[in-house]
Amino acid sequence: MKTAPTYAVASVDHALRLATMLQLEGTLSVAQAAERLGVARSTAHRLLQMLVYRDFAVQDDARIYHAGPVLQLATHSRSQTSRLRSAAMPHLDRVVEVVGESANLTIRTGTTARFIASVECSQTLRVGSREGMVFPAHRSTGGLLLLAELPDEELRGIYAEPVDDDGDPPELAALRKELAVIRAQGFVVNQGRSERGVVAVGVPVRDADGNALAGLSISMPEVRYEKGRLPRLVATLNRTAGAIEASLTA
Image 1 (cartoon, one colour):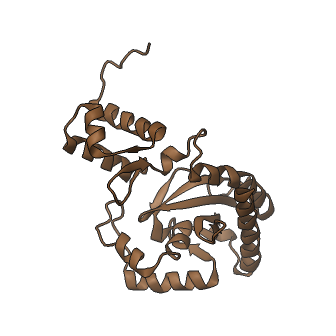
Image 2: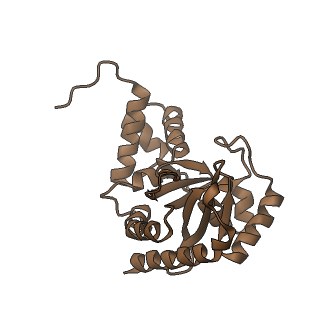
């Protein structure tokens, strides 16, 4: 039997218990969470909202909470996120070998983009692993690709409320124009937008129905980016995205 820590923090313990329930049982309402923990509904609501904020949970339109992207990355999970990551990893390794730069796979949750897989290249000067990191979607390569897929009404909806984790929300009119260009060309070039001195190129990864599931990107130091290589980089990324899509349906 495990021994409880001497200085147990009740709120941390409650949050971890809720995360475990979501991962193993699937869904929770605020009332169920409060009852299971033996706390007030207001306390349960605050704990669940913090899990949502950190991507351990997501809330649906019926106000029911489900396991979020972080929990879905567990090895035993058969979630879409887990399957996507497993299918992509061999192809990320190969694109790194071909291009010689680091590669990433990103999903979007609301106004944020989370890196669910990352493979570093072997060059001394390189972009390090981003796996597990979260960036504002409108500043990240994968995030821009996925935002570009949204209908205008949905785009307005996700930016209707103040964005807690981003002190520089996008100007929607300008963002709409940029997303229209990305959607038309089918790829995005991100020059220093998420990190100074870094250039990334990305394309979407789609499901069998053509819906964008993730953003596939390669990242490199700006000093190594040559605009003349862009068509070849995009072609390589599109082939890799196709291979990932084929692996998902195999």
